[in-house]
Image 1 (tube, one colour):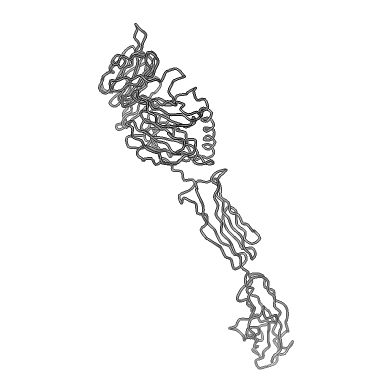
Image 2: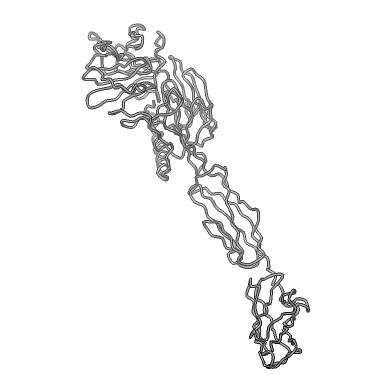
Length: 561
């Protein structure tokens, strides 16, 4: 638990600044940090739960829901102001009296004349009573399953002046003594610290087991030594800047201990230090530290990127990166190691959605070559890491659209004209940070090819009464650009006008066109004749025509008289 400290007012400014940044990031996407699966529902509002029971209220009444039998049991009491589960039963405060109940027999009176302080952690409870003669407070520690109590102030001779005490589930208690100094108790021993309840010497964070206090030890205002108090002993745990974060809960401690090291530690109630491996920037915020050591933290990974992370002691310093914190906090970890969260009348099992932001990009081809115009190819961006799914936008761009165009959102490339162009894909992770990859596209001069008749049909037969004969001209060896050729007929044994109608003209092949036809009229006369022929030939420069043999064809006319 963190406490406000007027000794370092700039901490608040830094925290507000950071929270604004986090807020902006959190609202920039609709994705959730978790998926939720309902595991239990009760007819009321859930207060607490464990693996076997759910404590809930309905109106002014309280009930226990058995998670295995699904039975509902009413708590036989009225006027309850505070109520908590503990292993094997529950404890509640009604008026100034404290009761325990095992769910079977009538509630048992546990303590009387209680003041305001009453807290439960695990099997323990701490509460206060007031001495009517001297006005001092007695701090009591109760072992609830054992049905035993001890007056720790009377036992140690260090009484309390204020109605205040806090504890952890392992039986550590911190309270403020008759001089208003923080006093730590454990296992029959109380030790007064030099931390005071007043603002000037109050701790920066506190739970029942530890207190954290920042003390200036350098000439600069922003460098502080951090001391952890445990069982009355102050141990220096590192140096900090004012805006470094820290947290305590139930004996667990999250703390960044050195401004030159971009990491921090998670320390267990028994003192085991777990270094968190994730490297962070200058600002780290501990968003949530559970009673079992689950830690959610956030901060800047680099000057332009914030991140959210989850870790727990079983991960041994590794962290799971989250998209944001939507739907996650607060939660509770069960004995099965899973995370749960209560919302109204339902308990949900939470499954963390690991966030994989893009950290680089490549293209699936190292180059592109086109050998004809209007040819197309599809490029694909390969994100890094391979499981990356999160980025703001992606776009494709050409350095020379007159040579090669690319569709901005698909990566489809089209050859436009001979030359070279660079195709680049840009992936934006956020407003400030992007990654890109490029390849070179070459569009070659397409060969224009040459023209010829079908080499397999250098003689073409037609019946005299057919009326017309069709001859095909082919473009071979390429089809790039426009190509033109002249054609004409010449008499052989067939006579002009009487056997065929002379023809001449120009064939124009467009870019990519590979076939044209010539249509010649054949005359059907009444004269009985032998087979006659005429010649059809192509005329043009050598770079247009193929071999001489393929540039002419004979038309053979069969007589039908």
